[in-house]
Length: 460
Image (cartoon, rainbow, N blue to C red; front, side, top):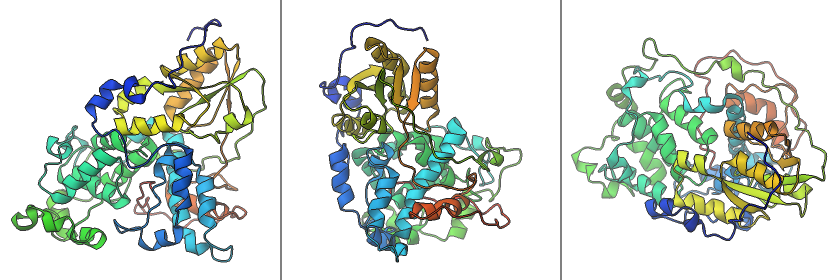
């Protein structure tokens, strides 16, 4: 990338309504506001209503207590550590088990983020072969039109499709059920579903989203995930079945798991010749160390990106009053076909920040901003995204120094992390996650193929 000479400040788009910035998106998506308002003020209001004790008791029910903090965590409006601290405040030091389940669920977000940081764009490839006896070629590459139109005839499926597209939110179980339906009943490539979710979910990110789709599909699990009508009624009651046209003509979910498996799968193993993209050794013994804190430099501008949209952004705090920039990433927004409601959420977050707003190619615009102010250093916060790493590399190649100011760590480890399965990661960091000294290493039990990640959507 060529160096740009110092010049005039690029036009600030901060006061331009987001609908005017992206008219084609707002024309395509009629749902301009999702289930949550963006910004730190809104996040703190939702956080104040957190009840982790009740969460641990009834989170599996569709009407149970969930925090709905996930979009604020995904975009760094709140950090995992401060949400964890808020949860721990609901239990005395002598009884952390009262909030154990909630903190454990938060750890899945940290775990998936760490896996994503290690494997990068491999999250878009089958980490292991489908364990359905079927080759990857047996799965269609595009979403069925009737699913997007919410016209499958199954009341539950159609309701979830509408909820996703109108609100940008689905309950944890619903995400699993909808993904299982798409991949196993309709035999569609999980990547197509993952892209659909990223378009609409306010909390969608490739780490939590894709790795959970792979869990359901069985490309990161020893067997495919299924659900049946009994499972649905247990968590949701009869709300869907009571109005479903298929209740009498034949509900595809009203049978046993054994019958479903026989109907949907050629077997519970990989098809002959199928291979996955991930070498498990890549996730073994991943170094852990506390991130370093850079030195404050006077010739610095701050770059705020979509993974840390908070007034508590570490670089903003360390450089009070310093010029800062946020760039709408046109290429990424187009690649993910980000919905109007999600762009509205991000816009609302950005409105609370002291930033100059631009759009286009991020590396180019951040460099232009830095050159316009004679800055040689760009201060920002880390991100696990391969795209972020490429932007940082482009800025460095252009002669700018890039400082990474880390947010508080969620949990620490005394040893390199084993990220092959969540259970091993959690064994290493759980003590630290509850505010205690990191636990010393323990002898690991022999692993079997079934010792694979349980599911969570990272939307506690």
